Image (cartoon, rainbow, N blue to C red; front, side, top):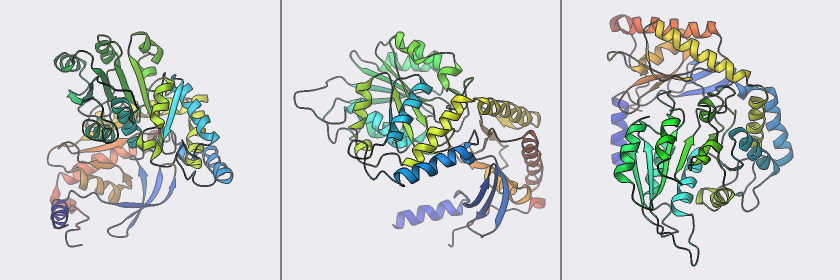
Length: 436
C-alpha cells in the first residue's frame, strides 16, 4: 500500500483530487450540496447533471418506479437466464427496439458491462462449443477519444477476457484519429487482412468533446468491407440529437435498415442514465442470434438483471420522449442559446451538442474556477482533467431557462475577471487533503 499512499499524496499535493460534494436535496436544477471536506452547504444551480431532459423529477417516472417496487420488490436477485427476468424487461426491450429501429435488444445493468459483453460475445463467442472452431481474426477500429467503458472493454478484448473460457482467434485493436473518416480508411487499408472480422466502434456524441461522430463518412469507408460491424455508443446521443431525440441515425437522416442494405451491420448501445432518468444500458441488433449470444456472456450470467424500479423508470421515460419530443426540442434550443452566449463572451468551446467543454486560458485552473462559481455565485459545473487538457464541462438540459443560462455566463465572466487577479481573488486550490 505504500505506493498507493505515496501516489495519492502526490495527487493531493498537486491539487488534482476532485472536490467532493454530497447532495441533500434536488428540485429540478436547484440542488443543495455539502462540501465534504468542510461540511459547508451551498444551494446551487446545476449545469453538471446528465439528466438532460429533466425526467428524473417527472411524477410519472417516479410513480412507475414506485409501482414496480410494490409489484416486484427492489431486486430481481438473479441473472436474466436463471430467474431474474420480469415482464418489465421485455417491455423495455421492445420500447428500445422501436426507438432505435432494430428489432432485438438485450439489457445490462450498466454500460461498462454492456460493452464488455459485446466484445466478449463478438470477438470470443463467449464459450467453447464441441466441434465448433473459429479461425477468423477480429480487427477492431476505435476512435482515439472513445469513452472509458469502450477503452476498458477493448483492452480486455485483445488479451484474456474472452479467451479465459474460449480459445478464440486473435483480436487486434487499432485506433484512428478522432472523427477522421479518411484516417479510418487509411488504417483499414493498412491493418485489415483477408477474412478478418471487422468492427468499428465509436461514441455517437463524445462525452468530453461534445462533438458528433461522422457516421456517413464511417459508413462510406465500411461499404468497402462487406459484413463489417459498426457500433455506435449513444450514451450522450439518445434523447439529445435527431429531431425526436432518436440519436445519431436520426440526426443524419439514416436508418439502421439503410446500413444493412449497404452490407454493414449496425449495433446500437443505449444508456439510460442520461436521457432516460434511470440507470442501465442495452444493445440493439437486427440479429436475434447475436442477442442470444449476449445472454451467455460473463457480464450477463455473472450479475443480477436490471432491478424492477430502475427498469420501470427507464421504460416510462423513453415512452414520454417518444410520445412528446418537445423536451428534446427544448434541450436543443437551450444548447444553441447557451453556446451562443458563451461565444459572445469570448469563451472557447468545442463540439455542437449539450455537452459543452470550455477551455480556459492557461493561467486559469478549472478547479478553483469551479470552486469560485459555487462559493461566490451558487453555480455548479464540473472541472475536468482529461487527456492533459484541463477544461470545464457544462451540460445544458431541457429545464434550464434563458435567465439561468444568462446567470451562468455572467458568473463565468465575473469569475474569469476575479481569478485573473489572484491577489484580489483570495482563493487557493481548496480541499487540501495531504495531511488527512
